[in-house]
Amino acid sequence: MMGKSMEEMRKIAVLIDGDNAESNLIKQILGEADKHGRIIIKKVYGDFSLPNINRKWSKEVCNSYSIRPIQKYSYYFRQKRHRHRTDH
Image (cartoon, helix red, strand yellow):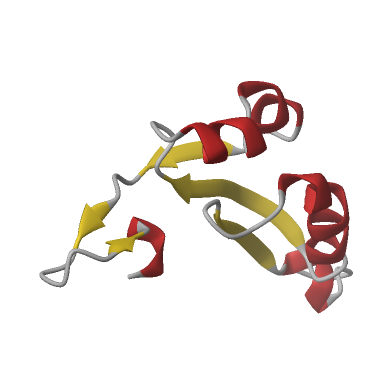
């Protein structure tokens, strides 16, 4: 489009590993992403059935920043080590 810079035309998706990312930094994360283009997708992935992620990425946090939570259940490897679904 004529008259728009590359940054204005660039579309950005912010995909968050909710098991490892801190929700208290979301304002800074989105601010930095916004410098590089227009954010059109915001999603956080994690096992929201677990209390620790449910506290970090509460309904209020997700709604405040229009972030769509995506449920990914945790599972176990053969060695019985617990792994977060978003790690794979």
